[in-house]
Image (tube, rainbow over all chains, first blue to last red; front, side, top):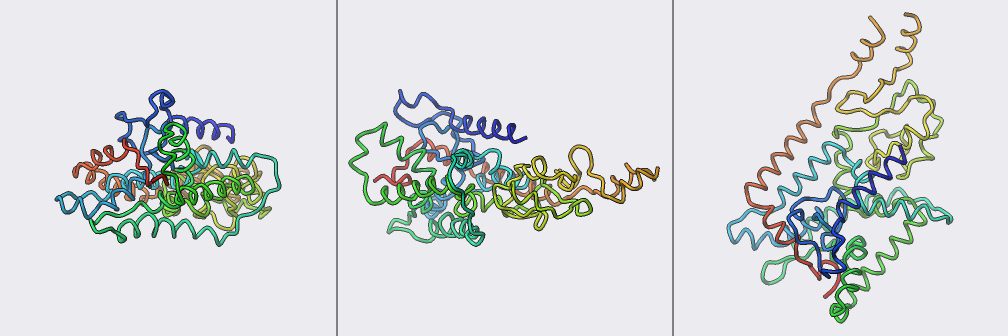
Length: 300
Length: 55
């Protein structure tokens, strides 16, 4: 299953970054697929990006909401929030585990053989802060004299944007190098910090900063596809704790907001059929029989 | 009662995810009706230099 997930991650990363003509055209993809929303975090200013980033687009729309309202249009991001909301309702943070290119990159970096560290659990609330303030409130509230706001998360924080768009653009268009200043340096330091942190800890950006992960986490109790715990079969052996890339203690909190449904606990750890996948309340595959049902089977 | 019917009886279809998905589908429709995709496309095909920390 882990092998399959790696392939799915690689395919999604390639599909959302499929414009490989950029070294020749020296610009970003401008074709019709750019109207499609990427399910994961993937900067649309990346030269190879074929889709748009939901987080960047929401900020852009909110930052210019006064101007569009003044022109009689209601462009507040209904279609973008609707699309990622549908994905959230279907899969929740499974998107982070299976379809996010930046999550995939972090997993690859974590494979580098170094000493590993835990991510303090309290830091996980950071991503909700970034979602509420840097993606929604600040672009909406802080505006210039003309009523235009700023894409705060993209401009001041997003390491994916620096890695996928900022650096490639500087390489492709040398004339831009003259405009590099403190802002880019700040973002470059954040990017290096996140990349080094990703080598030392498992998916730190997803767990502490990613506003898209925070959005998908809101669906933890109502998503269609989710992992469940069969308490009758659980022996509290804690094997599921050891394999989780997000630091979830599955037998203690099966609806944890951090769970990316990577299925490692189900396939790699649990030997007691205590963890199973359900779709809309119905177990997927052979139903995990609770102990009393197994007893009934044996009797019949 | 067989073991299979016992298992079926235990699991019920959850309706909440379908309501959530339907609600957000309506949001998508509202956005499309407001011609949002055209505006999104307009933004997505341009490089926002200040957004990526340049300029």
